[in-house]
Amino acid sequence: MLDSRLIDDLRRVVGDRWVVCERDSVMDYLLDETPDVVRPKPSSDIVVVKPHSAEEVSEILKVANERRVPVYPAGGRTGLVGGSIPTEPGIVVSMERFKRIEIDEENLMATVGAGVTLGELIEAAERAGLFFPLHPGDEGA
Image 1 (cartoon, rainbow, N blue to C red):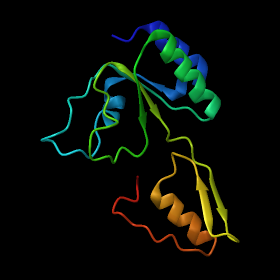
Image 2: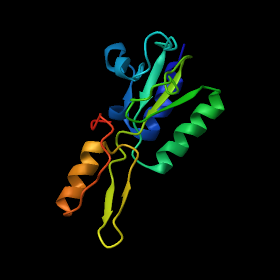
Image 3: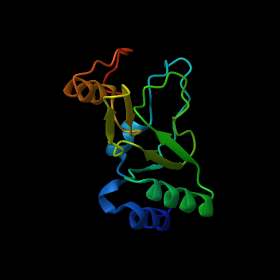
Image 4: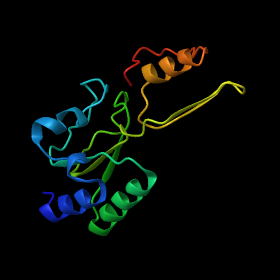
């Protein structure tokens, strides 16, 4: 079981608001789009941490390494092979606060943070007068 000292250490890194331990609140982070027949059984003993910078991610990883706690990265949670499902007690590092979008209109390039959804990227491209052609089906991811 994850102990309160680990939770306190994580709160010191990202702040109270960005550490989620309540069962109802972590449920969304236990599954992805993997078909039920092959989906691994998730552990319910997880804490979700929502960093805002590379420095915070680094500090989270240091805490996890010191305590030998598994880390599970979470993006849009639309994976189809269960790779981000936390199968042991550990820390889910959600990238949802990494929302930076840079549109380079001259070179027709976009640089986006790991928490940017496809829908947000499409909207940013449209505001710049550009078109982002990829639409794999889930623009909320």
